[in-house]
Amino acid sequence: MTTAPHETPTRPARPRPPHVPGHRLLHVVGAGASSTVWAGEDAAGHPVAVRVPHDVPAVTPDEALERHVLMAVRHDHLVRLRDVVVLADGRVALVFDLHRGARLDSLVGRRGHLRPGEVVTVLTPVAQAVAALHAAGGVHGDVSAPNVMVGPTGRPTLLDLGAARLVGGGPGEIVGTPGFTAPEVRRGEAPGPRSDVYSLGAIAWFCVTGNGAPDPVGRLDPAVVESHVGPELAGLVAACIDPDPTRRPSAAELARLVFDCAAAEPVEVVLGDDDDASALTHRIRAHAAQDEPPAPAGPRRGRLGRLGSAFGSAPGRLGSAVGRRVLGRTGRSRFHGRPLVARVALVAAAVVLLLAVGVGLQRVLTADARPTGATGGEARPSPPPSRAPGGATSPPTGPDATAPATAPQAGTRSGDALLTDATGPVRDPAAVVLALSTRRARALTARDPTRLATASRPRSPAWEADAAVVERLRSTRVRWSGLVPEVQSARVVGRADPDRVVVRARVSFPAYLEIDRAGVSRLRPADPGTPLDLVLLRQPEGWRVEAVSPPSAS
Image (cartoon, rainbow, N blue to C red; front, side, top):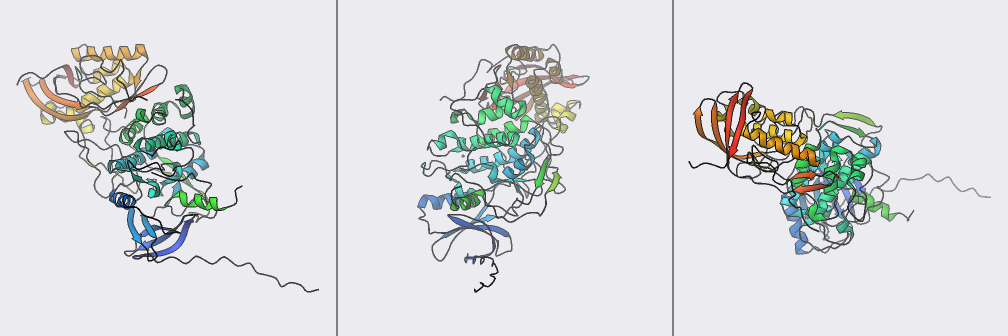
C-alpha cells in the first residue's frame, strides 16, 4: 500500500496590482463581484484607495460629468474623489483619499448604542458633508452607518461616493443599505436629496437603538419614535424618516436641527480586530459576500405660526417680533450582504479610546459660548455654518473646516459682555441684538416665562407679548426644537440719552421643528425676517428690549 506524501498547504498567490498611471498599489483592502479596492500611494506619496473594476464599463457622458462634479466637492467630512484614471485596457479606476478608523456600524455593534450627545457629534458633520454634496448638484445615494468612518481622532467621514450621482438621474439600479434606504427609493424611484436625509435620520435611529430604521406603511406614532430614540432626538428623527419626502428637512436644515438636540459630547470609540485599517466603501466587501454560496403635502404654517406682537413671537417677529424663526437648531447602489470576513485588522486587540470629539462645544450661535476649532489633535463637530449679512452662507475655510469660518458671531460671550457695556449697542449693535435674541429664543424654547427677563425688561411691551406667547405654548402643549436667530443687519437709528438706544435690525431664523401635544413634528420653513426698530434700555443688569415696532421714517 502506498502512502500519499504529506501535502503542505500553500497560501493563495497574491493578486498582481494593475498598473494605474501615477499611482503605486500596495495591497488589497476589499474585493467583490464588480471591483477591487487597493491601498496605495500617489506620485507624491500620499496614501490613497483605488477602486479598480473587473470589467470595462460603458461610461456615458452623464456618468463622466458626474465624476467631474464629485471631484470638485470638498468637505472635511466627505471622502475625496481625487482622480479618475483610465487604464490601458479601458477600465476606469477611481482614486479616493484613504481613511483609517472604525466603521460606525462596527462601533455601534460593539457598544450597543451611542448617547444622544455622541449622535450629535457624529451626525452634525456628516449632515454638513451631505449638504455640501447636494449644493454641488449631487446625491450620495448610500448614506448609511457602514459608510461612515470614525477616524482615530474621532473625526467622522462619509465614505463611498461610488453610488453618488447628479440630481435628476433616472431610477436605474436600486441603491442603498437595508435599514437606511428611503421608502421611495425601495419602490424604484430615483434617489434625491430628501432620500439622503431619510438615510441620515436612519443613522440617528441606528446609533441610539443599534437597529436600522423601521419600514412602516404609514407615519410612525410619535410615542413609538420617542420610545426608541428618546426625547432629545425623537422630533428630528421622526421628521427625517417621514414617508413623505416633502415633509423632511434639507440636509443643511438637519445639520442645524441635530446640533440643537443635545450638547455634543466625546465619542467613545472602540476599535476591534474586525475594524478596517483603511476603508473606501463597505459595498466592495458586501459584494464579496455575494460571491459566496447563498447561506403628500409640504410643511404648513400652523396656528402658532405667528404668535404675539412684541419682542418676538417665535416664529414670529422681534417685537412684532425680533426675528422670524425659531430654530432648534441628495444615487444608485446595491443592497449589501454581510461584510467580507477576511479584512485588514486595524489593531490586534480591542482598544477603548475616549476621544474628546466635542469637549466644550455648546449650542451653536448661542450666548453661552462660541464654537472653537480643533485643537490638540482632537476632532470637534462643526457647527452649522454661520450666515453673513444678506443671508449668504459662509463656507468653511482653512486647513480644518471644523474650525469656525467666520469671526465670533454676535450672541457669543463677546455679545453678552456688550450687554453690560454702557456703549455696547453703539459699539456693536449686531452683537447686542443677537445676544438678546438668543436669550429670548431660549426662553421661548423652554416655555419659561422667568427667563424672558434676560432679554426684555419685565412688564415692558416686549416682555408682555412674549409672555403671552409662552402662555399659549404651555396651554396648547406645543413646543419648538430650538430657536437660533441670525442677525442679517443692525444699525443704531436713535439715541435719546445714554441709557436709551434704538437699533434697526433684521433677524432671520433657519427652519425649525414644531412639535404638537401628540408629539407630531412639523418642519417650519425658514423666515428671512423684516426690519424692525428695537428700543433698548439700559438696566442695572444690562441692556434689555423695551419695545419693538415697524421702522419709523428716518
